[in-house]
Length: 155
Image (cartoon, rainbow, N blue to C red; front, side, top):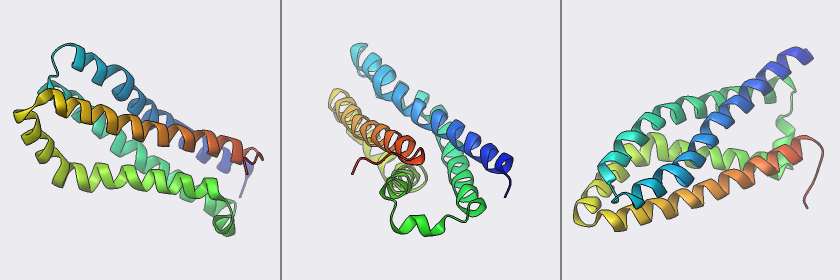
């Protein structure tokens, strides 16, 4: 392994996380509140978030590939046994990947669409709460990963 190889993979990893979690932050703190203020338009939310979904799917896979590359290049597989913040990253990535590739397209999309036809305002409130939970998990994980990767420990 050369330092440059690892640095390039880490840079790609960080860019993937920025696109992914930055998008989640935008949807959570800007898009959903704006749509709720303008009439709880679930159909518009669906249309706009669909475009972000493509970005999220791509960026989560970039994060996977670059994360695996960094573990491989640094031969750090043993760190998985005792590094909680690596597991926080893996679990967060897993939750989003499950949502993006399985739950949302196969279950949640149709359920929310039916729910929105009955009560769009309640559906948008639910979406906002779910997005805030995912954003909180994401930001805690990013913070833990940065601190942990630079030698810090919270506990």
